[in-house]
Image (cartoon, rainbow, N blue to C red; front, side, top):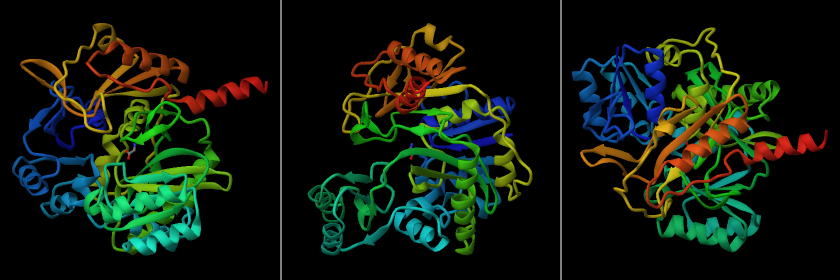
Length: 432
Ligand code: GLY
């Protein structure tokens, strides 16, 4: 089987790793693969965002399956093009990808479908948006409606901060055209959980929930990043809670998308806030999360390829179930100095054999490149070090040990990934 993975970050490295476990005989092609993938995949010298060239290449190369990792090519209609050429593709069409590419559309759809989410209003006009913020007060959340690489949501503690965020998004176009429209939302209190639903347009199967850590600093301080670490499973995600997420959130969202002529086939990723009033949607994404994938897929014992291929071929999930390992996984993202701001590239990376040879450590590369001068950094998020263990504490210690041992100049990482889970465990131990 010839599979093309579009994208070249940690999520796509994890997808490649899992697909090769599911189908060791498959040939995997990856767009501009990073330094960690080059030994296991065939490189395709086309950028993940060049949808015209990619569709043409996949057609000419008799590709059996395309899996699209990042949101941008989905929002640009890569799957529509592949479908027109009769190439099975896993991921939503451009219309269905609007669930992520337009936060304003997603909020309207949720409102229509009765999906629980924060109160909101959308604006293109700065004066009107600012008047709304003054009326609602703070804390309040300001989001660029379009795609902003995971950095377009700003939690504002004060009205002044929110007014500044609006100015920067709507007037100064801090996120470019993604900030042509803003969504202003009520602030929600609680703990966040990422739920990936494999969806066939109507039905879905939920994957193991995970928790991301979006801020750069320990204890959730500093600017938003694309994600500095994640863990799974999340002890708050009981079976009744997941049933509620599926029945009240995922299923009505899929139905509303289908009513809009935008059947969603792929991964519907719900960012869920666990509030006192129950689960509420923070945002939807139209693909696997990064770095959550780096902890979810290592725990998936059953095949990912089978349901993905079925859906890509236009089939239904039927009685598909997924089998999960009872173990825990925790990933720590090693980032370049200065990230999420500007950062240097081409820093030499040294990974000791004690790390590469450890069966309880999986390294998923993101911003790395490998050439005649060896392995070097080439991006902000460099490597996700996933630790596996019988308990989350064991997984954390494996992950942190690996993060410590991998060397490159300016390396930064959070040592507190999973802190809420550990605090919860401590509290329940104290309570007896
Ligand atoms: N981890 C957040 C995201 O993938 O959008």
